[in-house]
Image (tube, rainbow, N blue to C red; front, side, top):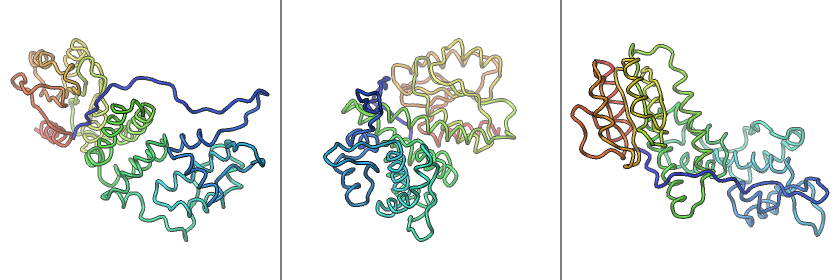
Length: 330
């Protein structure tokens, strides 16, 4: 499947921050602010405190609860363990047992889970089920980039780029876009999640050492097309097949792409269009005039059904990879 978003995301500042006192000292985060950061309800956070001792380490009677940086680090570790399948009770016990280490570090590293704690299957064993998808959704909604990268990387190593894109990444991107469309919320989630995706897919592409193609495969988004994340997925999937690409990215003007094609003589040019406003077939027709003409592949829902002669239309990521790999092998 392709990722089809309902909207263009805009830049907005976040709502989270430390409250400032009149004295200039940092009193910490409120319950509501910490709950928003963790992606849970304030009532849930209070329950964590009562049942599992996960409240502020320092609390004065009759004073409003304030969470320090160390308290927040503790809760981040609990959330990360939950995302990997640890129960809340076990996660709390593990993190509280490591309390001396947390107090020494403002940004603690991963906590070692004792062997007697039941964490469930490893992440890469959970991927065929819904567990990884739920964990990835929780991590993305909590702005936990580390957990997002861990889950995506585990899936890439076990299942590859195409499966990971179709089963995990694209559905979640669609869901994030749907939520923005209906509520106007979640821009920060989309931005942080996109960064994690690009990092993981870039790691796959960066492992390519001995490509099988002498002439490159050129990847570009149509002019004014801002959504080009699918190009990263295609680059990673082709790298798994030892095919080298040159990525031009989003909003590539016609003359820029023409110049690149003339200079490099690519074996394939793939052009992505997500929005109908960017899928102008004339853009592709001009590329067909170059000699020697590269194979021209068009992907994305932005293109119309009527395409210039000789243009190969692909419907999803798997078909794009298959078509390009076949052309490279010829």
